[in-house]
Image (cartoon, rainbow, N blue to C red; front, side, top):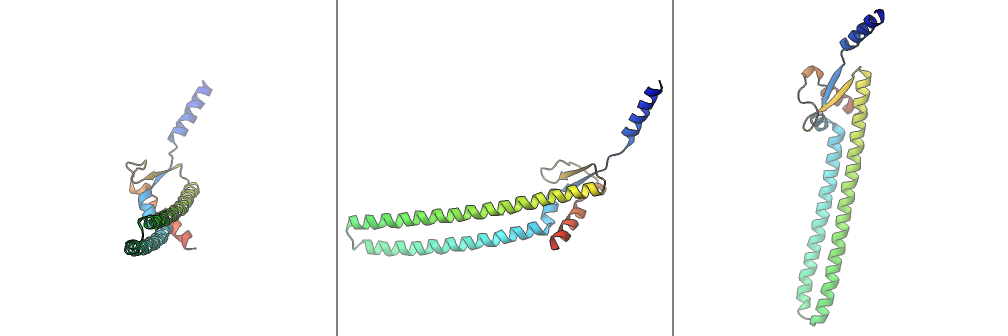
Length: 168
């Protein structure tokens, strides 16, 4: 009987312990995190430079194609077809190079963003452990928190910690 009473007491104490739960609005966090803002700005600049390069190459190719059309009128049909084939091959090669550069830029941007997200998750985990949280949930669009009180919202605190560490 004493064992049963002791077991009930232990179960009551365990069930009365409240777990500390907080949440982070992922969308708000990422929108306010300076490193993410800087990464996006850097890759936007690189993408704009890539676009200008593409426009410049396209314009040069169009000028070359127009010059060829004028020149082709004075050539034999066979010679014109041969040169046109060479021009088409060059255009295809240039297009492939530009596509590879685009893909490489996207891949490096994805690697940098994935690395940043990993650091954010580690920082949230460290914050949760340091502040005695049993759970820190993710909220925002597609998150797992449908409702949470303001008191449980850790987003601003996490953003401040992340931005302070990023500045240093």
